[in-house]
Length: 235
Image (cartoon, rainbow, N blue to C red; front, side, top):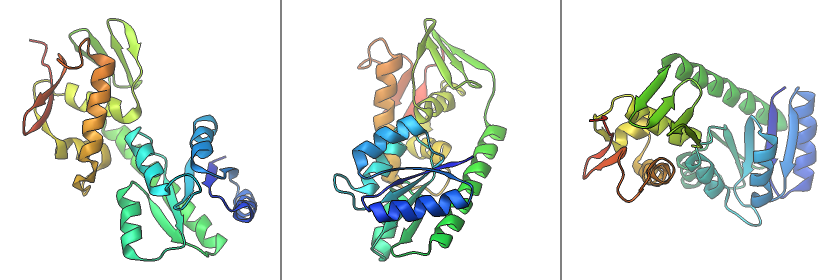
């Protein structure tokens, strides 16, 4: 049974959405603010998130961007009282998958959830079909493509899903220089804007802290100034 989570500070809305979803065959969990919602997500591991834009302690767009930067692929549907295109644009660029304005028909929300779930399943199946398999060995690093695991000197390095995908992309073609745009496309698909370039920079910094003996003088994940990044070719 797929689990849907709601982060919204309206208790009455929680009751309505929980009732509609449970009738539709979904399980439900919910939080009333951003920080408790993020903690609950780690515990409940929902399949889809419904996220209010204006929360008592956070902005929903910022929370979504934070999830994407951490490598989360969970489908996100924003809820908002605003209908203007600027607000919607911010939401989609933050990594949202859909946007619905209040008040809304609960039946429409269920249809949108079903559509997001179908897209997420298709994307996952396509990624599974197209990704490399096996193990890549570069120096003291062992990159297990099937298991999303990296080992340095025999010790597992804990990377987020997106951090691992950067390592797998670059290490799969050691010595080849990848531009930031190519890495963005590899992680999020074609059509993304430069808004995710900062996410790449942040993730590269985090990866280096985890896999490099000296992150300030990296051996494996190298910067090609003005172009992008490459993985050491072992020579």
